[in-house]
Length: 309
Image (cartoon, rainbow, N blue to C red; front, side, top):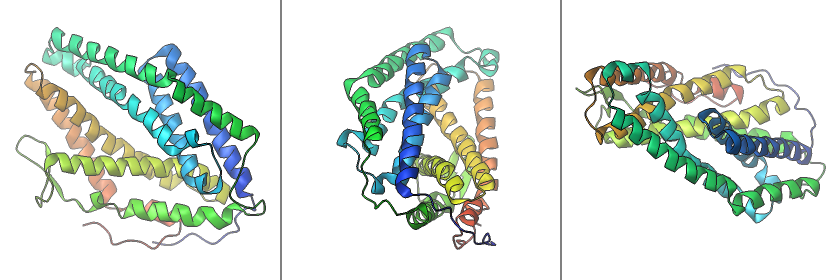
């Protein structure tokens, strides 16, 4: 791996960068929350969850430099996002059972109604989480902080001091995640298993899902940090998006199959469709795995780790 040429980091004050990054993402979260409460559909939910992640990424980069109110910490944002996760899974399931493949397989109307009922319950919980007093107080707390921000850092500290080491550390943790070392194969039913038998199937999928979460966080951090530092992040961002897509597809198939395993039997055609989705996602992951995070490591000028087999 060839490291990019050295260049001068713009002398942007850390405090200024933190204020802009947090304020922009707090405003985006406010808009996304308002839209979700008005429209209540899958697209609005997606935008709300992304807005939460982007604000969490800003805190991940700048929380050591800022003095935020207690109610405006990463954990509070995580709790809101966690209460939206079940609705997202219900949307994935609803999309699957109302697809053309499901129709061709003769998915029972009772199953579709059960899915719709489950989504309505999950939507009610997500709405309560978005409307709850704690969530509103958190958003107001961020807004008040923006009007009178406080910082741990001195006014003269610039982003070149703190951001590069932090981003490199996060990129190194991403590249060192145990999921990269997994050797995967498909069992007789087409499901993924650990070829070395160290993890059960759920353990394999949990590890891959944890890597996907790291990829998302790192992508949103680079979205902030790379332009500030003058890095050309396009190749790394594309790679991280591809990882999100491949591992996200594996997780979606997992969610759908878990629901179907406890439902009435479904047609072989639908099962085959899911198996093919999983196969395509696994092949995409295998291609991405060969690079072992190299596009990200190259961006942050990190020493390459040993390549995957």
